[in-house]
Image 1: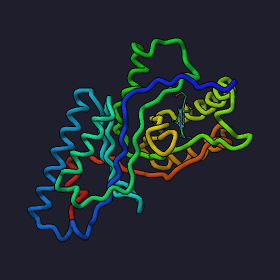
Image 2 (image 1 turned 90 degrees about the horizontal axis):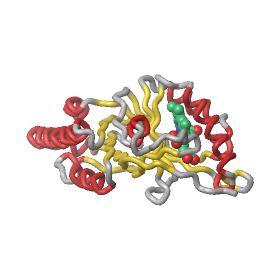
Image 3 (image 1 turned 60 degrees about the vertical axis):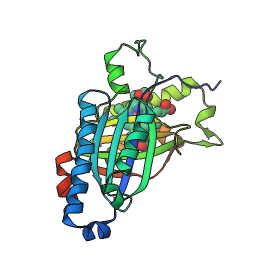
Length: 247
Ligand code: VOV
């Protein structure tokens, strides 16, 4: 009989995509621009401090293509903290030059299909995965996804055992990319428009394509995966904000 697999849930994650109104930004005075940059720099510094205190994590990225220009990626123990930091960003001078074309809220999730009898509350490896510090790798790839519910291809009508077998093969494909791609899977049933968020990190953007293409042939992706839009970003240091915004 189909039944839910127990999930381990960790920190909450907000993917906050912003688009810059470059026309308005260019029209702003030098003082206004300097003020906006310095204020946002301060805010990002406070997010880095949270990461240093191991109470969350933060990444700043430029985004390629028309879907967004910037990504602020924050991870926190509670969703309220995410709401607060998003509001703090909205209150900055810089936000007067931003629109928010997309955002995604979800919670770091580990399924227990392959549970090895470890105590999740004390096992350091599990704890580190549930409360992730974002890898300082060059590139990020984000997309939301569902598991299909259509006729014979209904993930939610399959037994836990059969789902577990498919997830095992999925994991084996993923493991081939160790050292090239790291993944953070977040659950978003009831939190956002899709069922999961997939956030991948790589040193080389081509590795995203290779991994995702190869996974398409795994039964779990071939039969059951439905995908939303894909976003690719490049990691920037906070200090690079000035260069990113220079006009
Ligand atoms: C670096 C690559 C990589 C690796 C090693 C990896 C491994 C694993 C393992 C071992 C497990 C199960 C245990 C757990 O940790 O939850 C998962 C779980 C999951 N994955 Fe994955 N995945 C990767 C990568 C990876 C990708 C690229 C995708 C997108 C699929 C695609 O076709 O585009 C994905 C999706 C998921 C999802 C949605 C889940 C949860 C499904 C559920 O029903 O609960 N994943 N994943």
